[in-house]
Length: 165
Image (cartoon, rainbow, N blue to C red; front, side, top):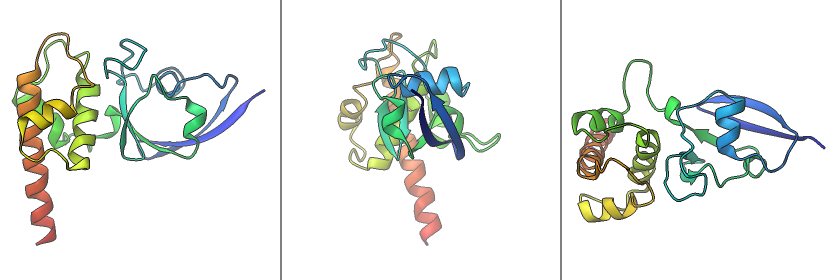
């Protein structure tokens, strides 16, 4: 039995036929849509390497069944920059050495974008660390990650204020 689903991924609509209802969103993105920036780390929802935004919310895509997201709007790491212009979170990760080996970086960046959109951390580094605690970094780049999130949050808030003025 086939299952038809429709997703918008990084602004592009995809009509997908699944022959197995157990296909995860992560496997659909990586294996069917060739969006390999989202990483498969633990495959158990414990490391955050697979974090994507689904309808604006952070989701561990390794735990999400693709069929349960029919009609969803999904953003992966491939969809956050605009051409050659990096997303402010990406630029801040580079500026603050928020990565070392880079394996966790796509999930870290997606989680950071999501938490900034949630607007619940303010400028409190401890709240940012807590909100990012579902994303593990084997290299221990946490100080740079926290600084990057702080800078990106401030940068995005400033640009939003300029637009509304």
